Length: 407
Image (cartoon, rainbow, N blue to C red; front, side, top):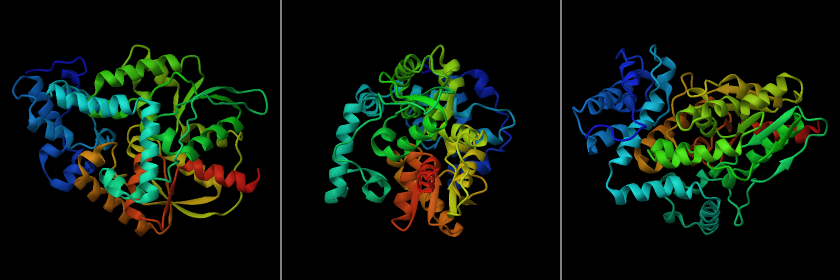
């Protein structure tokens, strides 16, 4: 059966690959297996074979596509600029569309309905909080069984949706903040740092009530219709703002690419900023202070959707330096930590191997403090490094330093 959805990889996208192999050394799954089908080049060849009707969308094709972390490291080195991330989302949308209805309904409910519902997430969060307190490991999947992978969760989770923060003087613009799904429930300190730093930097900050989850996890899992529905909601919610800020790297990367999902999404994507971009810009402009203290070393872990998808590397380091830290590099090529959204649940063995590798890099670097700008990466690092290490978002560390300094 050929492609059946409008999200499928296009012939132009697939033909752009010149099979040069430059992607092979930077692909985590190829490095682990040495298998061509576990490489970007091999996956694109499999997509082309299905698109031409030479191969079906079957279990083998699903295994080849599903084993990809979607880290997008291949895009950085590709001389033909193949949009691999978009092609992979399209291929997974095809797989989802051609699954048996029962299996499709369960997966789409998890990534489309549960993550898209604040009420559902509050219930999940409260349940996980109880599990943390009474140490019932077995009710959570994969690395979430190791409670060190989660921050201490509130029994009565709250949301920042609907909040408004006003600057002390005339605003320099209106900023909308994406509340997100797990960020809103599990990473409240990062949200608080984001809201306050934007406010102190001069923005009128709002968290629109009608917004939805960014849709990244749905898109990555092939739940294309759910991802598009979320894109439509966010297009309406974030209209009229000067800037739309996301404080999770994966969310920012997805919102910047909304032009693929909904008409008008490209214009919205052009107004989206990762929080590290905007806070570093406020520091550079003198609207946020550069602190003079020496807080020691911090290891910097680059989330894939910050480094590879958004090509952002300077800004997190700039923020940490402004806080008074000395950034320490752990990985010159930025290999994936293995979290990759729900990959850690669907492919726990591979995720665990990559997580252990990343943890070893952190230990070799020396500092017990690690900066990471994405929730999945933070959970992965926490679960593999243990309680002797602290993992926090760069803006969270800067906000803490700013309050301690009294500036």
